[in-house]
Length: 188
Image 1 (cartoon, rainbow, N blue to C red):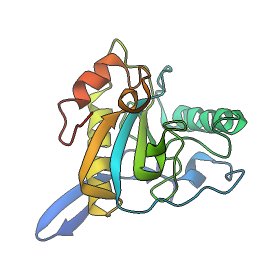
Image 2: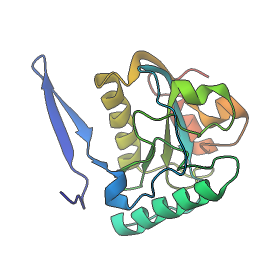
Image 3: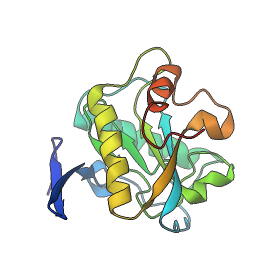
Image 4: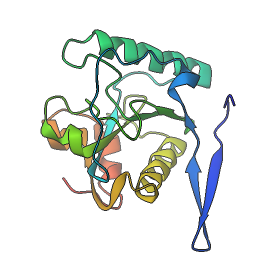
């Protein structure tokens, strides 16, 4: 099924309805295969690391799919990252979620810092140094984190960090970082 709009999928657990974002799969956005072996994550992981792409944002699903494909190509061509897109997931300003390496593969979103093998890396497309990401993007990230806990991909006592907390970069941007510091599980 080809998904072109943000759709919430619901699971019922213990009488509570949980809503999670639909994830646009690698095949739906036209991913290349990884160019070399990527190890599996050992679940549940302990950290969720939030990023921004430090770029302009995209406005439609088709433009965002192109953006994600171009990001993957750039990461594959980067001798440091190599093999595939660095992030586990990406989120656009409309709240659409794109599968990067997905739930089960180690990302390369924190460079050589050892946290990659014990984390899920989520990047919001855009630059958030001087502006906040949209409410839709923020809600999608929060829902993705809840989904990760529900699926036991992320420990229920996980620690939320900004990229800057693990490698000294400006990522995920000053405005976005100030927001995530107020989210549950934040721990720098």
